[in-house]
Image 1 (tube, rainbow, N blue to C red):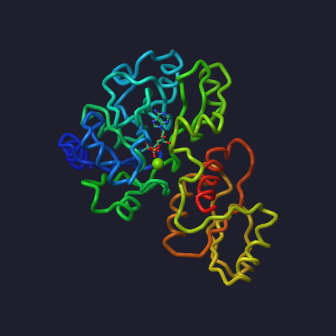
Image 2: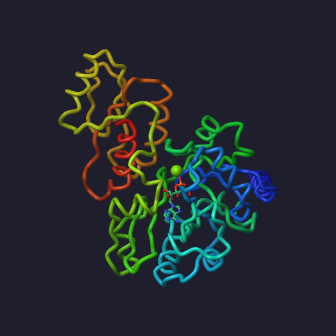
Image 3: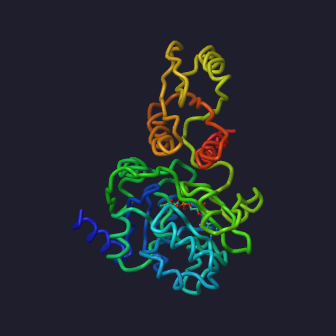
Length: 320
Ligand code: TXA
Ligand code: MG
């Protein structure tokens, strides 16, 4: 692994594109100060150029190089949650290339909490721009094999650090205004953020999300197979209805066991942390099996499920 990391750092220095593990999902990384390398990320992902990338830093001391007018809240959150699954949106420093920000005056920064990602960033000795290592709009990869399956030959190197611990993308918090706002829920929860800052941190309004975080457009994080969400009490009836239409249906459930009805079942945990860990791998496996429909049992409404619910809602909307 040590040699692989050194080789990956060399690739980044040479302007190549490297897929690497983080604790959330795999990223598709390039030298953040090399616009040609960054342009290749957009080409490989087929991502529209106005969708900004997250810049990954080796440690919080890089904040001042990449952001300006940094509020105290940023230092407090960095101190508490970095390295970890939290991205801060701050005013960009002059050094930040337009290609990364999609032309906005802000930049997303994070120090990832995965030993391989940190070693890579430290050996590279600079910032790495990296979106999730999947095609635009698709499910994020949580193993190196997912990246190989989806992007394969197009990536110069894939650094394998095993399955990602969290499995969902980082929490994104905007600190651009006086009131911190969550643009994307993730493993770092609203109560954790509120406790660290001493003020209530809430979710941004839909309009604000549309404007500021294009990756948060309704349809995103989606498998290719149509995905429907059914409330627990309607699940059985919906399975029967789809089967009556001769659809090949896979059911992704987290509580009920209804193997009496002859459909294929994927069972995810009823614990939101384990559910998040396994969700994307399950969506990919179900996609690969080419069902007509994925029918997913709705997850609970409470806050512990916020990030999972957010991704599921967007994945389902992609097919409406
Ligand atoms: O966990 C993660 O955040 C992973 C790993 C690889 O770090 N990265 C990731 O990147 O999810 P990506 O590109 O798939 O999603 C980044 C999100 C997008 O929704 C984008 O719109 C938002 O971050 N974003 C980036 N810069 C932003 C900015 N300046 N203002 C608002 N949103 C921004
Ligand atoms: Mg993504």
